[in-house]
Length: 389
Length: 230
Ligand SMILES: Nc1ncnc2c1ncn2[C@@H]1O[C@H](COP(=O)(O)OP(=O)(O)O)[C@@H](O)[C@H]1O
Ligand SMILES: [Mg+2]
Image (cartoon, rainbow over all chains, first blue to last red; front, side):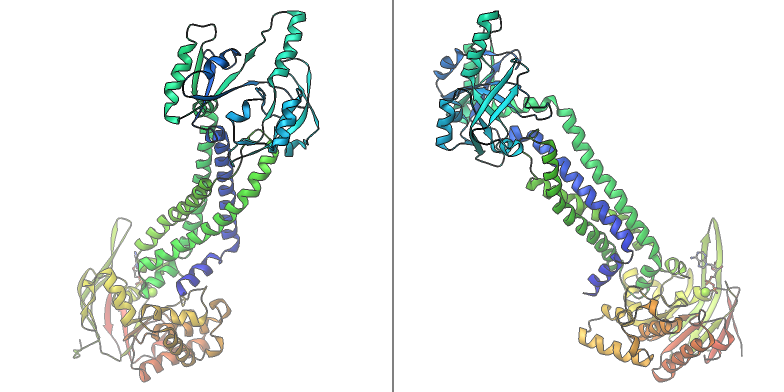
């Protein structure tokens, strides 16, 4: 009771100093949480991937396509339960900064392979019968205000011209980690339009797709079935490389790994700076009160009691800062997410991040008190008392 | 050298030196002193003569280099840090020149502080503190913080804190050194009552002859040695 009262009153003794230290903790905890959330978002594609889904792409590079006729051959492989395909469109909606992924898909099969995209049956039917229809994710719809029936113009960068699509369906995610910022339209429409163009000018291939997505019966057969697929097309014009969706997504992240590592390092540097600030506050505090601590020792209080006062004060400051910091992380990440739009399909503070924030604040609170508590335990009463007067 | 049977403080050939820089400075060269129980003794002497050092040794917050130091029959130099802390809490009441009150605690809470080291219940502690407050005439000011009290009042709070646990010995290092004459007179009157009515042994360091007169016995310390005077 008295012990807590002493801690509380000591903490409130220098309101400005304690206040600024708490502010420092809040800023550091929010920054730490935001940076970790960015890193999580980076990996969200891989997190949200299914382990019974394989991706087959051109063995040379993702930028090279695969023939459409592979679809029927892969479908016949034992263990393959469904197959669909998707092709990167790379269009620009109004301005370059409005980034979201667009895929030309096999409309009839795509949503069987990706059951986590939830669409009302009426909307999916409307999409299937409209060659120029498109399906947009809920987040995309919210960000740009797309509604059923709206026309969305995309300026092609790979495929020239302005392409106009009509929103026929909006999909939701089955889980929080499902990417709901994608845009899908009919591959048939893209392919036929290309055919007409090439008929006039020649060159530029048609009947090609970007990747195949394959559902398999059991996740532990992923390696075996991947090998079967790739063996089937070995020594053909377009050799394939098949891997799990997770491995496929991670290969994207790997390209930007250095940035992720840098962000991670910065998030820990922020905590180190916080530690320096806290340790300084606690050292200053303990130095000022050395006479009081010596008096308490003379009265018979143990150095455990004094250490308790110092740890308690440090923890109190860290606790208040951590609570406010963690609570502020939510609105701050929301605001950040709004600013970057659909760049990160999944952007949310994970439970793990909150734990990490709490652990970081707790460790800083403890560590900052170690040196002052040790010093107070070591200093002789006589020396401490001499500092008064 | 008077020989008293069963002195509360028994000191013989006590020496104490400090290391300052690379040099060893001898502070107390050969101190022998017996203080009978219930005595009120004043230690006088010029600044730097070692008065505080001697008081600190008796109070068990510093350790001698050599010689005998027995307080209440216990050779306190042999006690461990923890044992010494418990011993001080039970046997010694401290009064300092600058009061050394906790600025974040009220007068009441400051006086209550040493009782937190005892087994007393909250209610018992409250009774003790209220009694102590009335004895030093500060019942009206118990909710005040040290910064809201005058120097004399703060020292009265400090005295109450010193005797709240009913220790055998009160040590006071220049208790009136920072006070005006009137406040000093009040402090000395309280100490005198504690000695005469509650039979506390009081060891007081002072360089004020007026304060020293309150004591029954005055000892002068000079260059690390004691002289008997008066
Ligand atoms: N912890 C210490 N370290 C070094 N020198 C000390 C220490 N304590 C006391 N001294 C020295 O010992 C001498 C006596 O000090 P002190 O006992 O405080 O004298 P007094 O109380 O009589 O003024 C002084 O010269 C002082 O500087
Ligand atoms: Mg002194």
